[in-house]
Length: 77
Image (cartoon, rainbow, N blue to C red; front, side):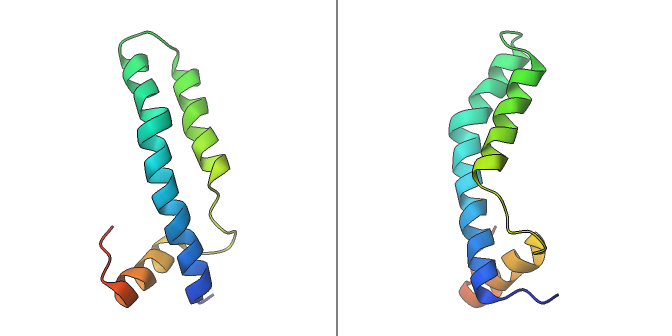
């Protein structure tokens, strides 16, 4: 299935949102997990919460969509 520009834009937006949320929500917990302050399950739950908050559209190939954005805009991911 070919990715439409609208689908590619949604994937790109969710990709950027996930990057931000990982950095601000789950990555700090990864450090706490590595230090033994929280469990692996707590850290993984935070990662899953980011994914749940920023879902990719079903049936859309993420790499194909991001490649379309790169081709259209020159954006590097």
